[in-house]
Image (tube, rainbow over all chains, first blue to last red; front, side, top):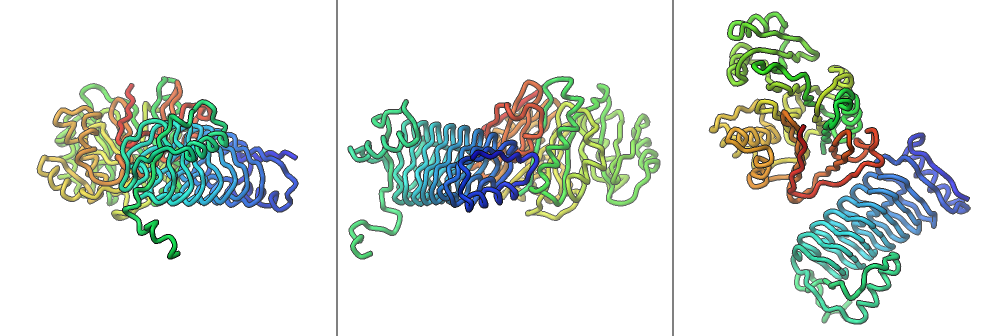
Length: 229
Length: 297
């Protein structure tokens, strides 16, 4: 069953309550949301495998805390899209503002345009794939998960990075503290190819990307001590 | 927080509707700044040798008393009483002399704007209060800037509300906070720039006025601002001919710009722009950090 929700006639809370109740009933396949007009906090806190298509630009915190749901924004997204996502798949066809995918633990965020600053800040396990470029301070203190940038990266990429793996095809304006370029081993190429396939990206060859990661000098972890934990 | 909006008409027909759409934009930013609001509207250009001043009194003041006093020095002056103790004064003369004279005669009168096109209005409370009081939605204009304030740095008074103007036809609205404003204010005061409050954003407006006085274009002045202003900011700056947008290089404060054949709009959030005709299909982007965007008629 396919449903439509018009935000020019309804409210954000009405939409979110509807989506949550549909999740519990579990007999709806997809929901089209129209006239978002930059509204905040759309499709947040979902915890069931719904398919949601938002037609237009959205404001702050779209699809935050998502679990299992597949959310597509056909437009641009404001700050902190997919913040603290746990699982699921979020696609933005346009550009995204600051902090896209901040603290996300799992799932995938696909940005078809550019992401601005601090994309993937404190990333905790999700995959972020950006077809365009990312702004400054992206992957700041990112802990695990992967970030793929098909375009360029802004200044201070991966500052104070933990164990997120970063793949960038274009130029990197500068690397942040403790972020270094690393070799692309076969396993990394395979990992990147799988991520590109997952995002439906065919025009980019894994061999064109450089890999960046933590020099592991800044954070309080020595791989030699791994057995102690 | 704070919300800022700017709307620039690219066609004569859109100029007629500018006040209406601008009002919707400012109203939409209420959540970002419910403490006070202000706007600068550029319209009704004066004759070549004429100057218009918008001044606001802190104490009850009659139009006739104001007119009588100003006529002593500016015999051809006229005064129109607006709402909330705002007065629109038109005269022949230089703004510096006129402002000094007004300050001398009426210490409780604050000049909000001076120039040939700019008019600034401010009010405490929700933006709707300001928009209704001054009937902004019925105004036409070439461009307009507005601000909804959530006070963080200085008191909630009309005088602390944006836009700030410290030069003819020049104004600034600011979302953010500046950290080196005290020292910079002292320096600018020595250079002859006059400030009417202890607000940080007014220092930014004064800084731009000082650079322009030294011969900078607005773009050059903003380039110098990138060097000399320390803090967080998204600025929208209005001049007689147009407006400019600048975000600090760290770019913590939000901004969105859209453009069509009829208008250019900037706002803290897209939802303020979404209300404009043709917004859905308009190119929309986030201004890059430390980059100056400007439009002029």
